[in-house]
Length: 233
Image: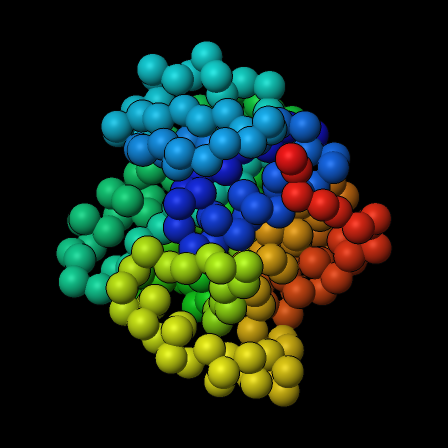
């Protein structure tokens, strides 16, 4: 399986990339972003493009992929709707339209968020915009498309958020998050589970189009029957 990861430098993207590199069934991973990760791995290929809404310069590298795990995202705090839409909707739409044309048999998995508004008419700005991003992916024409709507995510394996406030909160609330995960496993997922669930959705599908923490964890559990994995050398 050949997979693409967009937004691999973020907290969720880091976790997804890690699981892709660990997965024996994945033979090649293409990471697309504005800047190179600087990470070396035999499976890994990177392509950089300064404007992620214009993929013409790398379009020749975007064909022949089985799945795209789209993890790009920013916090809406302090942003106008126009600015937030440029990042959250415009980039998603650009990738969805190009990839669906080049890879009609592709499975596209979009990381959205709990509370996303599929109607695009609600009062919460970020939820409307994320809903629009989900809808453009669902209408693009992929073989399969899944909307991951995680709520609370616990980062594992040394992964951190690039957003300072999230990084601070996750650091100081780590014991609380760990307890919540034990007491209310459906309310919390992990970067590892998100990555494993995405791979499972790409390989065997998922029971529904929109998946929240409970569904993500269940899908990751379904993938756990696979043989033990080791980090590539």
